[in-house]
Length: 541
Image 1 (cartoon, rainbow, N blue to C red):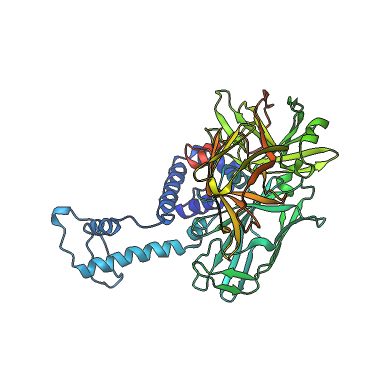
Image 2 (cartoon, rainbow, N blue to C red):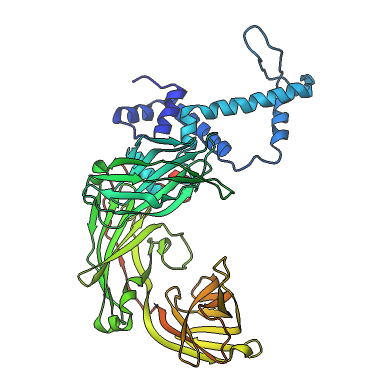
């Protein structure tokens, strides 16, 4: 085959397509093409650094002027506006300020012209920039699974455009470009409450689990609430307003769209590894591992949990679903690859989502990861603990008017809370005037406390629902301080006496001892020799 030119090479890099065998072989044996690929990649790197910079460096003007001092700017000739050539620093002519400004404008104009070229403009506005991509998305891209639904809806001068979608059985990632009448990008100004992801049977199966964005594009991360059993997905949105940044103004209009995502090719690449391990804790929680599913853009871990009769009695029926497993994966060197629901150090969480549903007395869990390399190395699953809301009766009595001079300490199940003030004031959660009780506090929690149920009881038997508002530092022991602390709802007068009661404790159990080695999975064809770290330098996303 013939060697490419630089423009063709850059177009190939932008496409993200996997080379065919003939092209791959040619590049391997052709030093000219290897050099061209390297040059194009270096140029793309320079453009990334230039165009994704939040602001120009402080010495930008000085850098431009210093560079232009080596350039001889001549008056317009017969064939061109300006011709430049390098001169030796000692013999360079003096350039007038007017010429320097013209040259500066030319530099900026050239940059803007290049930026306006479709290949570069589309590339820097892509969801595959370092800011918005991850290794799973890059894997899907290298397999040729990026789809273009060609969505472009315009109303009132505002445009919503979708040109990049990655979809498989793990997740759906969608890049959205929203621009105002001047073409300026708007990020996070659309309410996506009207977005629906359905299978071909009409079942709603998707839910937005996160949004990320660069300066130009918004990425919607959509996870599936259940297993996907069809080869196509329907993405439909009803959008009737766009917010204007830094104002209360809203533009009303109609930006509805609908398209299909074909996941037939992606589904054919899925690899399932069955798991058979199980473990029962001393408190009666049984964990049954089920399977790992490697998809082009990530990995799903599926398992189920069930409670013994005694354990079920301890947990309020409507809060059984609030249980939470804490675990991590580590390599042969004992290093964390990914941690889930805990405050361990080491590698940041690579989990995308977790969801569960109750079926036949068991809670079935699906954990979705963008990166879990059990098909490349030996990994071990390690259970760190779990939490589940349980009924409790911890309480402390106090005199509200004397708390400032006589603080009271609540102690229960390893948690310790110091109450230091109680006043009647305005609810800090509401803009309108609403009178509530406000308790200043500081605490150290051994347990989780997100699902705690707190009440304040007064002498006549009435109980007031109470919630926490403040700051929390996470760790094995969580420290909390009030801002204002406990908010006692519906309380309008300070009682003579009161009792703080915790009826539900988000109980943390750490008395577990279980780990096992994951069976080594088969790599997806086409990703056998891919190192995810190479996508973003030395750091695996």
